[in-house]
Length: 185
Image (cartoon, rainbow, N blue to C red; front, side, top):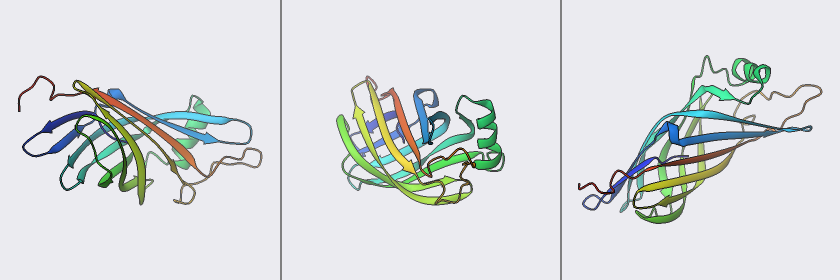
C-alpha cells in the first residue's frame, strides 16, 4: 500500500519513498448476496524509508477516511455515519515496521510488508504482499489484501434483507517518477 517517488543513494543503500496522492488509487470491494459494492478512498500522504542492508523500514501512509465513496449517496452517508464513523475517526493509516524479501533498487520485487493498520480508533497487525517495479525514471507498486472489518470491531452494515461479507477487499496501485534519474546525489 505504499510507494511514490524513489531516491536511492549508493552511499547509504536506502530507498526513500514519498507518496504522491494524485498518483495513488485505493479501491475497496464489498460483496453481498445481490451485487458487489465498489468504492474508493483518497491517499492523504505517505513517506517510507527502506534500508537495503538491514531490510528495516520506517514510515507511514495516511488515508482520508472521509473521502470514501461508493457512488451511492445514501449508502455512503450510512458508511460514514454508522460504519466508519469518519467524523470521529477521519484517518486510516498504515505504519510499516518490517519487510520480508528484498527490494531491488531497479527492476521488479515481490515483498511482504508488515505493519500496524489503524482504522476506527484501533490498531491491527497486517502483512500485505506488494509488487514493486522500479525503472530509471519511474516506479509502480501494487497490493491486494483483505480487511476483516467485523472481526476488528467495525459494524457490519447488513440488514434483514441485505447481507454483506464480513471482509472487505482492498486494492492499491501507486506510481510516480524517480527523482534520482538524471540527478546527482
